[in-house]
Image (cartoon, rainbow, N blue to C red; front, side, top):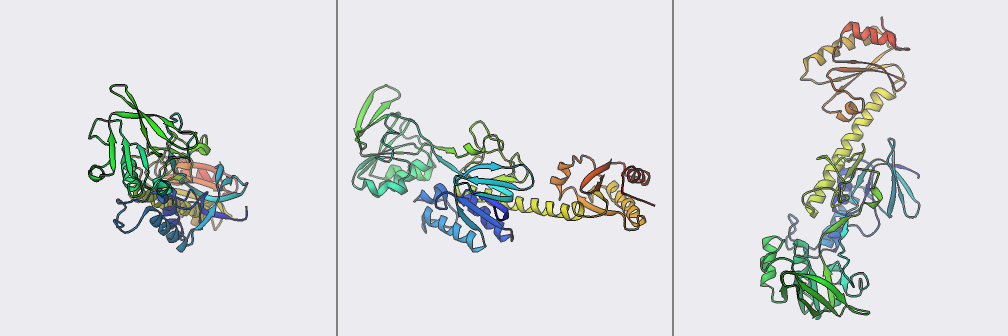
Length: 412
């Protein structure tokens, strides 16, 4: 471990790369750790018609290349590595890769993404990579002029099925709903219904994938009649949702019941200085545009957090004399009066005492860390440690008593 980054991003999908752009552009030393090529799932999505400003112009892989180039342009370092564990205690966070490399940073942004969900249907695991696929962009060209089946009916399933029709002879979509009912957006549904290469099997689920060395057929069960039919296909594509890649985060940050990372609107996790962005975060919509927004918010929040820490360190922790730290707010008249009392006490000390003022609105993290619940609140620091405090009732007599009770602080 040779250096400490300001911001270290775990995961190089759209959320992680957007965080890299915003972090580096703020002149913070920023790096993104990604185990594969940058871009995440978006780099495997050929059809991307809903990213603002790019309609009909480029593909998912192309957009992700531009994300990565944009981040690197501002100075983001992209490191190849697979993060397997974290050390989140203390002001410096550390991540460890599968090769034993250790990287450190003052702030972490977790953007590990998600991966396609497996249904564990008989034959699925055995024939994975042998006709069973979860990525049309990756594997569509292997099925040129062949017949394939698609499991799923959400946005990803229908859009990827449309892409498959550019290669396959026939694409059969197995839908659990009644005829005409899809979970995807209406625009994609309308296009799919008009595509002559797409066939539909309604009110059905995939029961089994059949084949020895390669996919040969599928067995499909009608959920109303219970009838099982067999259809010859050469490939099966699954698009039935995702699973967050957060196994390495269990016990480190708060996860919900589905193992998605819990954050607030600032992308803050349950650990100070640790943020999350993208598909691994608990959220309503998982799209490239929302992942990018998450990354931007996380990086800006991290920037403010670092600035607050730096200000506190310079004004309080690194000052050689005792320091009176006042938490105040300009809209609270009592706190303005308290500042006057404190300034007088510092002036009378003859240089043996310093004063630091923190607006609680701009320094909420520091206020929370020291359990400041009333305004004004005054803390007396000596050698970086709290020696005493006054909550709300900041009078001249209270300040004199505070200084007299603490060793090393002298007032006239």
